[in-house]
Amino acid sequence: MTKSSNSTSWIQILKELVEAYFKSSNKKSRTWHQHVVPYEEGWAVRREGNKRITSKHRKQSTAINKAKTIAKRRKADVIIHRASGGIRERINYD
Image (cartoon, rainbow, N blue to C red; front, side, top):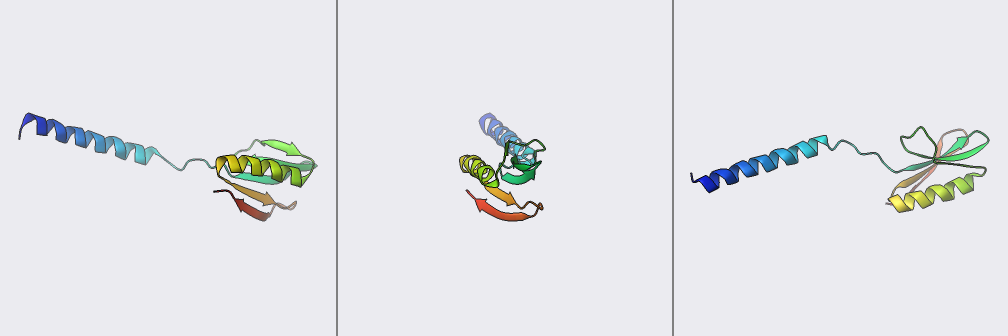
């Protein structure tokens, strides 16, 4: 085996190891899905997985419009909840 082909094989092996590392470390990324949820005396928009709310609104329709704006920008879903907490509707902007 010549020196150039030997170094090429090591480069290929190194490249495969780096790719395997990045594939394995690329765990599930967070989503940008927006939830419209009941909050205090009104409604709130909350990103999926967040404890903190994005915005508060007096009316559900206003919260839905805000969630739609964010979801369209991020190519995500809007999940609209009922006052009881159950899911009423899901809108996909994928």
